Structure formats: C-alpha cells, structure tokens
Image (cartoon, rainbow, N blue to C red):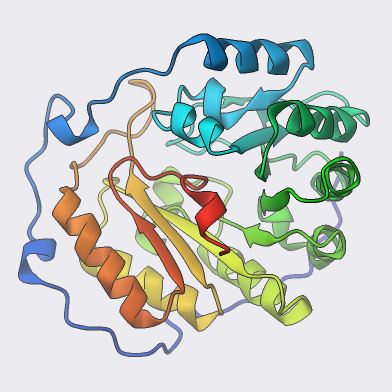
Length: 314
C-alpha cells in the first residue's frame, strides 16, 4: 500500500545536553571478542508448570509474546511479577534490522479482534503491568497505531488496575499515528533508539536516528504527563563515548527512563557481537545516566526493554 508522506521535523543528533561526569577509562577500553558467552550471560532456560500453562494460554488465544518467542532469560521472573510483553500486528515485519530475529516480509491482513484477546490474556495472567509492542507495519496507512490504541483501551476496560506501557515503532514519522496512541493514555510511551547514529545504516535498516529522537520529543510535547522511555543495545560495535552521546540526546528530548542491555546475535545471519560488555561497565553507565537526569536507568547484560518495567513508573 502506498503511504502518504510523513510529517517529519528533523532534530540535530548532537543537541545540547547537560554535562555528565567524565567517562571512566575502564569504560572506554574495548574488550576482546569472545567466541562463547561469558559467565555473566549464562542463565537457565525458562520452564516449569506455570510457564508451560501460560504458554498454552497464549497459544490458545493466538497471541505472540516477546517473552516466549525470543526465549527471554527473564521470562520466568517477569511473568512471576505480573509483567508480560505482547507483540501485536502479527509476526512478519516490513523492515530488516540486522539485530532482530523476527521474520521479515510482506504482512497480510489486520486482526481487529486482537486487542480483545490481549486483554483476555492480561486478565487470565493476572498482569499488573502489560507491555504492548509490535512488528513494523509500514504497509498500513497508520502503521498499526489504531490497533495499539484499541489494545490499550481493551486492557483498561477489562483490567483497570493494570499499567499499560507501549513500545512503538517510529510510524515513519506520522504525527497523527503518535497522537492516536497517546490519546488512549498509555502509562509509558517507549520507543527504543537501539544503537548509535553511526551504526543505524548498517544494523537498523529503515530506521532514522533523528526521526526516533523526534518521536520522543513530540510525545513529550503532546502528552507531557506520559513519561517517555527508550533503550540501547551494547555490543554492536559502538564506543562507550558514542553510547553516552546517545544518552545526552535522549535527555535533550525529555526522555526519562532508559534501559541498557547486551546485544546477542540471534543467528549467524544477523549482525555479529562485536564485544561482550562487562557488568561493571553497565553499572558505570547506569550511574552516568542518573547523573544526566534520567529518573530510572535499568542497565545490565540481561536487561531488555521490559525487564523490571513495573518498577520504572513507581
């Protein structure tokens, strides 16, 4: 489907930001490339009766969760704490990011009943915090924003006490799509920046660094009461200085919550891991982020966008 030209407003990638503490020398040193995961990335795969019960429930409702689809190492902990991440709008993405294992291709159709099923699953799972994300649907005129909004409203109607966080795509810069999602009043608006500007052309094909920053800026301007959140993956070849510069840019557009985790290569066809970042470096980056003014920074090798998401808005 042909798309209307998005309403884009460029923003400088190096926008002025508050001065952060100097980057520790240990952070700037490049770690050697590893053939195997280091000890701090070795975790037990999820399992057990409750995990299998919830997987069966989701399969019966024909729903996808990032938690189960990606065999997230934190799934048992998150589900136990009442947090889950649903992936709506199908399981075929219109883009080809080199870090993501989701299938790429040409999606067909739109499931208008999906929001009601997500709400049903949230009730059955007893969720306290639901995260709603999606594949990129550049084939849709609104990028899928209407289904995002309907899902938020469905969960609110069925489970009013549940916090609802959305992790949205860039909608190709369409402000109307962003406004449609914000009008449904999510508790958190998340859009992951993922990597540093230099690496966007290589690993985030179809994305645009300035456009992602602009989406976060617009969200704060349109709905200042809704906190914005973003996430970075480390280990794709960025330098620590570049990662800190992204943190400056995120603060400059009002982003309040940040997650930082280790990139892991899904298959040999995806971008290789340039290095494994030591837990001490993640701790240093958390301290830098807090000094920059983020109200919450979740930083660690196994951190993903939704890890401890229920704590990010307390």
